[in-house]
Amino acid sequence: MKISFIGAGSMAEAMISGLISNNVVESGQIYVTNRSENTKLHHLQQKYGVQTTYDLRDLFHQTNIVVLAVKPKDAKEVLQKISLFMQPETLIISVIAGVSIATIENILNIHAPIIRAMPNTSAAIGQSATAIAKNSLVNNDHLELTLSLLSAIGMTMIVEEEKLDAVTGLSGSGPAYIYYIVEAMENSAKEIGLESELAKKLIVQTLLGAAEMLNHSKEKAEKLRIAVTSPGGTTEAGIRVLDQHKVKDALVNCIKEATLQSKRLSKQQSS
Image 1 (cartoon, rainbow, N blue to C red):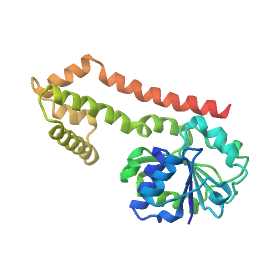
Image 2: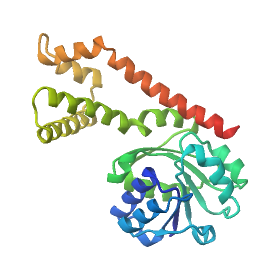
Image 3: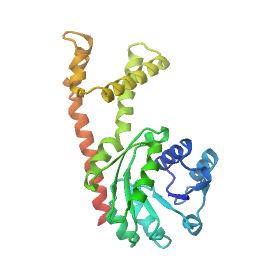
Image 4: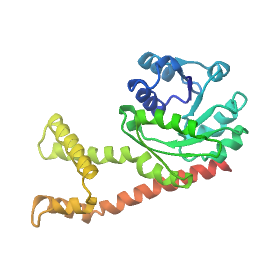
């Protein structure tokens, strides 16, 4: 099997790391290219042993899967550039946020099996939450192959394509929201007199524990929160401040805005 990555950014690296570390494919089976930044290609080659090239004929020769992992703003230009080399039997997996399957088909001017996927950067440690959608040319073999590849980087769910903008806003960008909250927790740790290493261990384990509680409990998050919020206690005091600052509303608006941005990107690419 040969997998060719178009794009060498954080998402491409996360997927490459997951595929190799989980022994799904060997490093020599992965080829990578980007527009011009040779430093990133050199980094991937040195760290993972993948093949890198700017020769598109070499990149697409006998490739089984093409992974589109470029920035949305570069998508049209890149798709136009590679359209001359695409073969209709090649499976295309796109992780470009906000670029629809129809747009990819139109720019490439090809009838090929296309799967649009929305993983997140936790793919690097095999913990991505990934949603995928497909066009009518994707058969069961394509789907099984894709699921086997993506299972190496985390959990995968199949959804209708119109839900991918919401998935992008919720889980695609989700790790950044969690890191943002952790930044605040780290800053507060300094102010209340905890050393950074101690604070990090406590924060990480708190996140892991809360995630496992959510995963194993049949209760909703609201009930789990209420269960640990004793009247007059420390948690209630802290939650009161969050409510005063409307943190919950801010997070809801954050995810809505990210979803809208995904839709805007899609309109820009299709116009």
